[in-house]
Image (cartoon, rainbow, N blue to C red; front, side, top):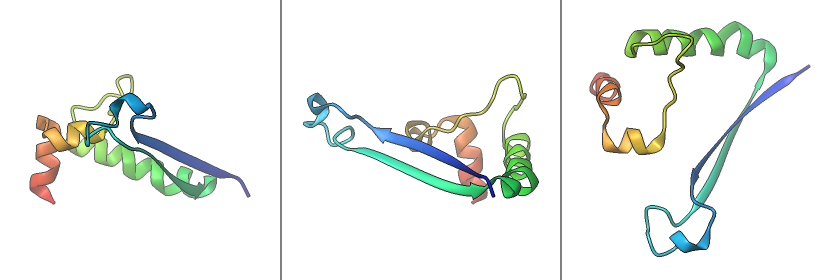
Length: 83
């Protein structure tokens, strides 16, 4: 069986940012899915989410960043209101 690993990083790896609590730490998060599950479920659900909440076009992918979620850019506010 094959698997797909998704990894995301948040923060800053250098020590120069250690005085700023918003940039003090580096965090790596990952999730593993069976590749068959990605193809049959995950991909279609993510595409549906992008189509429902964003002005989405496959040539211009939607990328969600922690900073944008925290600062409340308009397309994130729409999602948060519905949750």
